[in-house]
Image (cartoon, rainbow, N blue to C red; front, side, top):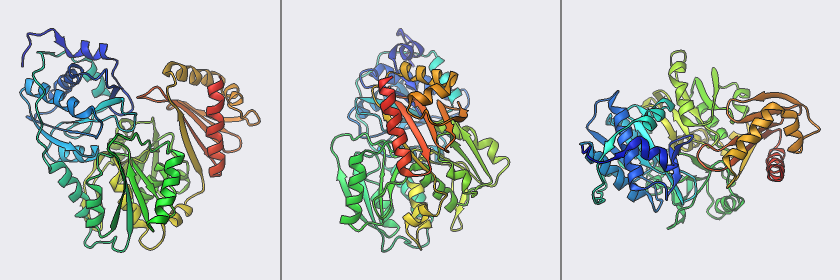
Length: 477
């Protein structure tokens, strides 16, 4: 590796404006220059060498216009380190994570997930799964000198990640249990759009491909647009679908609608998946629906900060006490924290967000009923969420800080002055329980200038109205 340059990873990262959020390093495309991508790669390799022995790194991308060039810059850095690489092209993040785990190597996913296309990011994987918050700090502080980047190389795609990911799920079943089912795959620009139909068709379903896009579509599974809600209902009727399946940009967060075209909240999908897998203990973020505990389906439910590293951080202690462990988030990503049996076959742990597993297990659970009936059978607590985009992070943080000091005043400012505050939870942002069993949760986004609002209530209409009222009043603060 060349050390004759004044390029130093820690300095470049510090000056870049790119920062770690809830999952991965994110920033504007203009900030994620070749040198910045190389600096993160050098620092990542340095941090991995402290604990792992390896000579190969996997790399993959999403469909953002900027992702390929970023991968090229990462590859140059790997070459400067004397590390071989394997490039898997456009695949879902969990597909990359799974093959990296199987081959015992670190990996880099170039993706900005659901955020707008003028932004992008890097997700890093250890040979044993996602990096931790401690790993993030090690990467930021690593001081690795490196030389100027060479010409960006063309990258040849290896199909192993895609093939292994498909086999992971299709090999579980002795027969095509989805025979007679019609599944609509809302493709848009999802990184997994060329894989999903292969999985569902192998399991016996008839697949209808819907709305593939040549431009990047920033689908946020926690803030589904009214347009997409209406589309799903129309698709379900038009194509007589049993399920509509889609994901966010990098394919680690599912977006699933029932036979009526009604999108399921991610935590409800996760609950049904965990029940179908017979999971003993769950780790879930504080923003998830309380029907999870009310269902009494699990021996333990541990609540964490929002973000997959926090969920994963609970897996090891839970695994010491319980037979099987998993986690999921309100955005739908399902994390399998331990090996588990499906129809007598071992499904290996995959401690990173995955979109396909919850959809498949929902279909398993709905073999003799409808998806809507499964949802109706759960404790009836309803959640909604939305966000204010282009909202200064400092302003979001100040609103939360003021609310912690005087939650009753904040509730009045949000338009709920008639209700008393019952409890306050500051695990992540500010989650306030009101006397009418209404929950209001404000949280600055960890990877974009956005303020998110979550609400839980006794009816869907109340939850939606609570979010809209809160965000409307916040805009006037």
